[in-house]
Image (cartoon, rainbow, N blue to C red; front, side):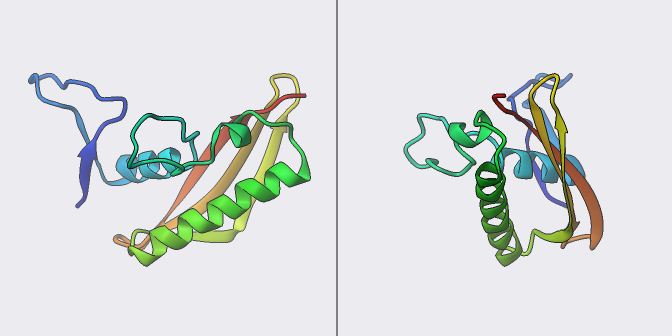
Length: 126
C-alpha cells in the first residue's frame, strides 16, 4: 500500500509529519496534477494545468486544453501502473452564479483494480 506526505504539509497528533495512504493519496496525486503549476521549484515546472487553464473563460478551447492535459496526465499514470482514466465517464457541469466549471470522471486504481470517482472545480471568468 502506497503512503505519502499530506499536502499541505501538516503535523499529526504524535508530532510527526502527517501522511496519507491509498485512496486519499491517489486523489491528492491527481488533484496536484490538475492544479496550477505556479511554483519556484526548478525541477517541478509545468506539472499541472497552469494558471491560465485554472482561471480562464469557459470556452470549448479551454475544455479541450483541460482534456488534452488530463489525457496526457493519465497516460503517464497508466505507464507507471498507477491509474487508468475511464474516458466515457468524463462529465462537465457549470455553476454560472459562482463562475465554477467542474470536471468529473472515474478512474481505475491499477493496484487495487477499483474504480474511483474524482471531481475538480475550476474558477472561470464569465
